[in-house]
Image (cartoon, rainbow, N blue to C red; front, side, top):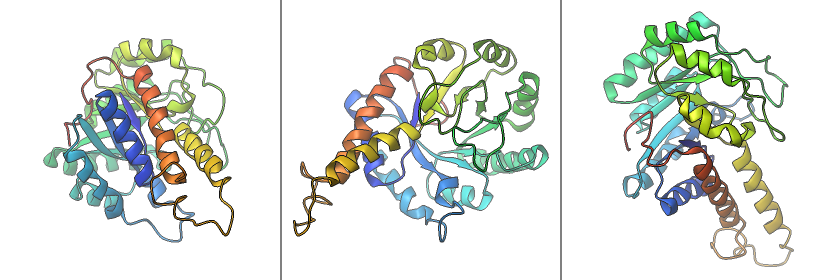
Length: 283
């Protein structure tokens, strides 16, 4: 199952349209950490992004709506109130004790609302190492203890996968995944899907991976489409056909189409035929 992360209206449209055209279940949503990133002058209003959930109510496909990678309890609480039906609790910036306590707190709130919770054990290395530590593989017995103590619904794991890998492929340790699977029987999650070797997709799905996260490759395609479209614009041409009219010259629509094309490719590779949404019910 693919979680294809969005960051604006057009990217969300591309994800949903791709899944609808293929009649495939999908996981949609936004990155909570990005929406309140330190480089922003102020955090984004989550309500703007949560409002796009309304499009899923009329969709012809099963879809989950996740608030991804956040360690801010206030944001998680707001997201649940606004209709996200899954959350992923980020661990990268917390010590193990603080993370365990946060996940338990989120579980206590989320499960009373019918919201699924994903957490992670281990840390992924980053393709861009600036500001991030080295990776740490998921320890199988620690993963089992964490799952049993928290009651989470899905577990993000580190088996060689890499966050924000802009070129090349990660080196995946399938034997390590097998050892994790022997200890953990809930759905497993691969973050850093952009750099995941697609030739391993079928095998890791059989070993319990139910969700692959993608974002970097979607933004790469989106930016390429915008760059190509914008190259055709010269002042004093009218800007309207290039932004907001939705025709063949509209760079935003071109970005949407680029996302849609990539998502359809990912669905074909990373979704088990007739799969259901693994970590929550249809929104």
